[in-house]
Image (tube, rainbow, N blue to C red; front, top):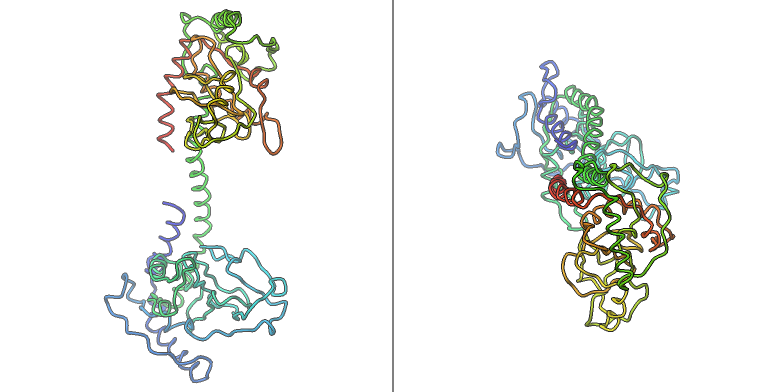
Length: 483
């Protein structure tokens, strides 16, 4: 049950006479109603209020639920001044020190005053309505926001707030409880008019059926609700924390699993699968062969890895290397070719979405420009794309043959089949958050090709890389199902 559902349940129990017990010595709602009518007639004779047209008698079919025998169903217009003309005040008559209340000053649902402003600071335009301490203030504009309260003192407000008083012994706080109850909320919001700024009409309000308890019971109902409010607030705080935890849990779980994977804690190590050192030597031999063949260029030697650089411990059978030690790390063009209406897609960081390339949003370049870019950064199946500028990261493991060029993008190519590129993909996926923290630039952050080439990479044996990815493919879908 959400906090709002709990509040609604308590409010509904309150107006059904189920929140506190009934006490015969407190009288009945009918006796109170007669007193209210006598008071109303006295005010009419005194000229304080105007006589209104009689409201329809209440039929049995209208009554929405059962109430205690000591209570009575009445209409809001029969026991309050809701339909009476409101006392207006022109801007010329407004004193600067007057409290000026706007709808924006009232917190939705709770009715708490969140901002207090005097008329001279508000900048009054047009007529306002007087309200007085103890009156109920009801927002007829967007009533679903439940901006309802008892005025703590005199002030002025816009005509969208309706101030009204009860005749005789009706606790204004009980009326607020009634107006916030789910039964009333449903009725009012089913008959509002206006699409963008829905309002509730006066006829709807004065015709509302009010379950009227004796005055003393009204006070006990309000006291019980006020007693329960701190507990509801504590429940809401605990519920919000739990909801936040539940929202974060799948993502946090995914990060935790991936972190275990790249630290060698997701699957066991098997001596028969060799070591990262052995794999590293095989890759270096292949790299030298490709350099001699002119397939790749010889790079400057990378710095030795110190113990202080290593971000976490890895198994003894693994080896810390730099990305360019075991991969061919290139980048795409940094220039902006001329765009054409028909041609080859030019993929940038804006076209990377959730591990996929969105070609539908990519701009097109000519075949000649594409060939020129592809001379240094041809993308093949099994390569990994990684955004270097702006939205850094968003790695994509290219899974199908497609003709396209890349801009402001790193391209990770395997040097030999001894490196399992899906494992590299998951490492880059988890490492991208750290890379973003280390990125350079102000308005538009970036990471350099040199930064990526020198970035540390934990190298397990090939068979273990594959077992890690296989386990991730089993577990990660379960995290998605938790979202």
